[in-house]
Image (tube, rainbow, N blue to C red; front, top):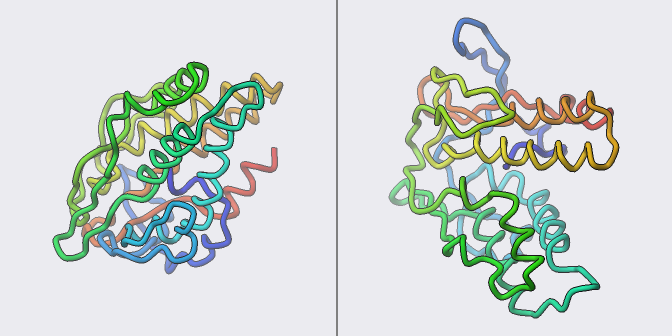
Length: 239
């Protein structure tokens, strides 16, 4: 969810590492300390975020703020439907809590303060409620509290389009659902692209990019790494 961004902030990737994944070498880039907490700053104004979040979230907070507004607009700005202020508030609050988990540096935890996902949208018209839940987000959404400095083996099931993650490359515990969430995004994006008459190669290229966006831990468990670069992102969008 946090790395599929064509942001100038990717230029700030701190240094290059060689990381062994399975039997091949890949070029990976550091996104910083795995358990660092940071303030969001002005990017968190829309959601009223005044607490610290994981550093990777803070890094992409500017783009996340734009994504939140686009998602909320897509759901609640239908001129044919009577959308109440409560509906708008409920949808907004859900995405704000999902995008900005609480990072506690004192006890090394990250917490998703999410309400019962099944109830999201009950204050909205039926079409909006069904449209929200059709995305399948509730089936893979993380919840509760995770250790911010713990790396675990990725989940080995739950993906349809994306290949199974490499079990030898551990991921942060609080991002263990990211492969499933990326797969869900890939499914929805592919369907939207094909519906919009995009060619199959374009759709396949986008799916490949999204599926490879999962960040992972360095071998010593201290750094968060990615193989995504701004150039690759721009190349994906140039189809």
